[in-house]
Length: 328
Ligand SMILES: [Fe+2]
Image (cartoon, rainbow, N blue to C red; front, side, top):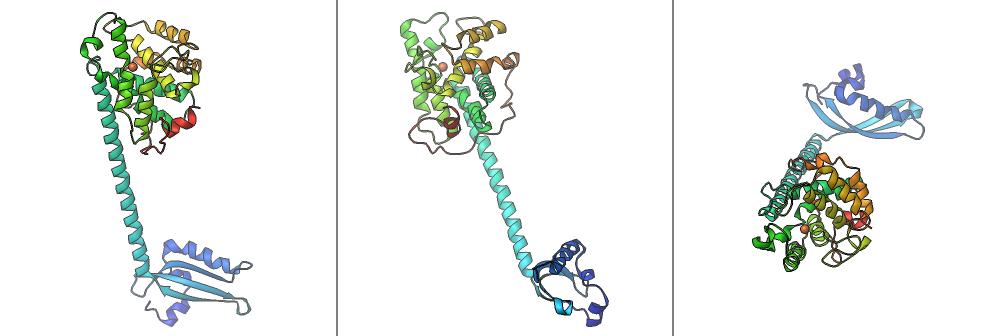
């Protein structure tokens, strides 16, 4: 370090230690006085004769009989610099991975959004129906006490519920007035078409979207389609979107009907609880601020985290992990 013996002996040891390391050094050496601690090791920056600092690794030992502390030091400046460089590189790598993951998330969500817009492109020139259904369904899910992950998945999966309408011809989809039974049968096919479009998705959000596409027209009393499932046979996700979808359809103009007043629409949903809809889902819906559900959706405006970027590990049943746990 370049100090003379006289210099070292004339001043306290800690004066040679970097000011930022003094407290830690004092604490370590103080341990030597404690019962059962006769040696300690620690690192600190130690001043050289020309005013620079070097990193030293100390091994100190107390000899009680002599009332002295013996210490040896090893210069680990290069090792310390290498460790710091490694730590910095790890931090940069971590930041890069985080940035890339976020970019990937954004791209994925953007694609989901565009896909939902495609689905409603022909029959909703404001392109807002699917987004409102996504928001309302997520709010119901939150009201039911589902996890943040499950709510976020719902927010992004529910807008795809009618993706199967891509396979329905304009002459039927845009027909003003009542559909014939045969035409209605064709419209009902949109749930199976949607299920096929979304089949074998690798990500939870797509698997949940598939589950919803297939089940959002089932009814609690078994009178829905395509399978006539009833009660809890119907996935919770489908039971939630059923309420959100019908509420939104009632409160907006359609080629075959004018929008209902808000209060009438809410009353109708409540009325249908327990037979058309799951009463528990209706109860959660009833607790929401209904007027706000009519407001335009600003790009994913629920203050929700993005859905988990995880591939589904389930191979035997449709449905996201978060939902599989919460919908039983
Ligand atoms: Fe539908």
